[in-house]
Image (tube, rainbow, N blue to C red; front, side, top):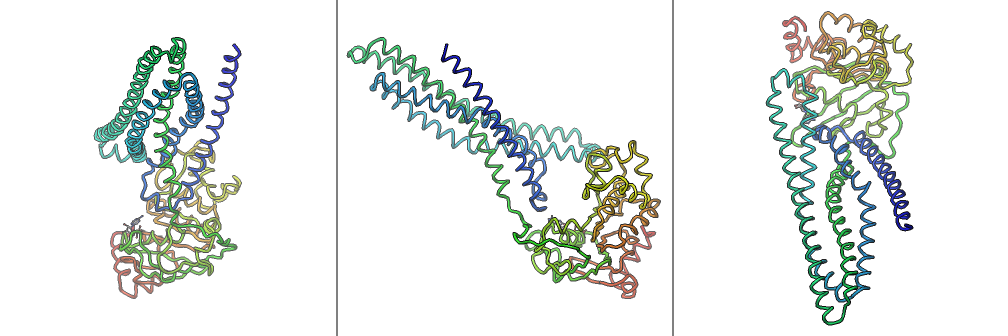
Length: 515
Ligand code: ADP
């Protein structure tokens, strides 16, 4: 009765303690994984599918969870039980115990090593396959409009069946291996009992063992194999968790391509002076994208980058926000190299309005105050009014509280861009980067946009990338980029006089009605 009570109490404490420990560890791990995702450079996200990254957060951490909650403590309990029972067996009869151990241990070691070899690779494949399933799922959810429009639903289901099937097969392979290993060890268990009976009978005949001792030995023996069996099963979940640990540690050891210097300085009171000096850049070696770029933007000035698609215009914007570092040359703000400045203090002063504005699921307020969460509702509404987009907000049920759907898919592309411009305006940047930010806006809204742009551009330096030359024309100077080089640079009038590439570009644009 006492031992039963002790058992109940210790089980209770064990479950409570391990449960808590596992939750704390998983919590820490989840926060660490998310923080690492926030720290990694843009390059990492270009190379890696987001669905695969989701598995790091879900199924990989889940695999560890199984080990943390039950596995580790079981390992200790079963390991100690095994040692104590072995000691008891040796105490009962040394000869019989040694025969048993000599038979069991080598077979178990060989079987475990074989299983380890196989499962090391197998579980990594399982983790990769589930990551593929998630990646395919995530990509198809994100691109569901395209999927439906291109009538790909049926084919996509087939593609998903193939991917899930491949995951199922790799999982089946591992369960087969695990069952084989379990069955093998069960066989050793039975074989061990048979050997003990036969050898015990032989010892009884030689009067080295009594029948009572043999029965006691047999009883202990079942307690010897139970923890052994548990350890074998635990080994499977350990191997699975090990593969997850490998994937997670790969994530943590991922290089941060654009690191912040230890002694990086704060960029205080940025006035908006920007200078690119002999900047060259490539994404992939031997494929130069920008070649020897030189230009200067003084506080309050604007420069538009114009040129054919793929010339490198957006890349300039990405270098400016330090998503990437140039391989040669330097970019300075108020005379300080970008690499010597903290990310926070640099990006605090910059607002980027991309072609496809990203709106998050949540209220219009949280989307507009995205980079400046402390701002009051009055200030937000005031800014929207100044920009002439208060109708857009009032039209939504709930005003600023209206909840936007994921990626703002309940709004038109033009409306999303207007909100993105308002978001930039509210953050009061010293440098504004418009990366094709007006391309989705219809001509009817153009007047509204002109007004909004005037306001946003007032008092800050700006880099304007625009196909629509009416937007580019607002800039003080225009840089015409071709094959990663600035081939012409000057005011609109100067460049027209030049009769060069820009003049030709402008003529074509005008002949198409200026849209
Ligand atoms: P633009 O804005 O002038 O249309 P970009 O600056 O976006 O052009 O791109 C310039 C070139 O760099 C293109 O040829 C594009 O294919 C390439 N590029 C852009 N992003 C990447 C990337 N992450 N990895 C490799 N190449 C890229």
